[in-house]
Image: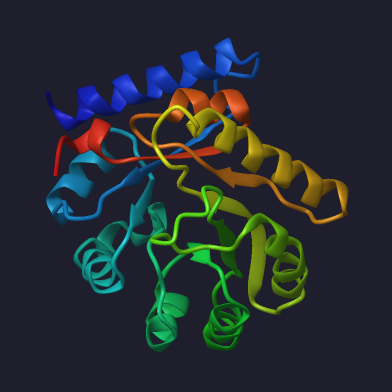
Amino acid sequence: MAISDSLQAVKTRIAEACVAAGRPPDAVQLLVVSKTFPGSAVREAFAAGARAFGENYVQEGLAKVAELSDLRAELEWHLIGPLQSNKTKPVAETFDWVHSVDRLKIAERLSDQRPPGLPPLNICLQVNISAEASKSGLLPDEVSALARQVAALPRLKLRGLMAIPEPGPGALAQHQAMAALFAVLKADGLALDTLSLGMSADLEDAIAAGSTMVRVGTAVFGAR
């Protein structure tokens, strides 16, 4: 299937899931995950209407941003993979969003290294909602304190939370737990608007729980 056709199919899935959840059909943003796919595939997806792209690996993402520099004003680049402290500078200088912040040190470096001529860097805190030892992210009871610290940093804008629930029968409950945590933080006065939750296989459950942004790669580009 052509990228344009698969992209449209994903957009239809998102709109239908929104309606089924009693939400407006355009309530959820699509973030197209382009990791491991070439810049030519991103360009094709852009031509089909995609504007936001997610990369897992810093060097690959930086190379793709450079390759597609002619589209830079129209593209939104999101880092969704783990970020080491020694790689924060090029990320702060290049990306529009970072979804994987789970330590104050990383946030402070991004804040210090974000060029003043650019808009604030959009930040999501990564939550290890399934408490898997192999996954990065904060445990739920650690989120509130770090959220307040990050929200106070200059050159950053705390937008919300991100998680990768463990697939299986417990996934829906994890989506709902993320939505509940998001709601608690907002009720506590944090101006959050983004719950980055759901991928190709589980976007319907994520949208039903309250996701505002789904990260979809396989369903757009095909299997890696």
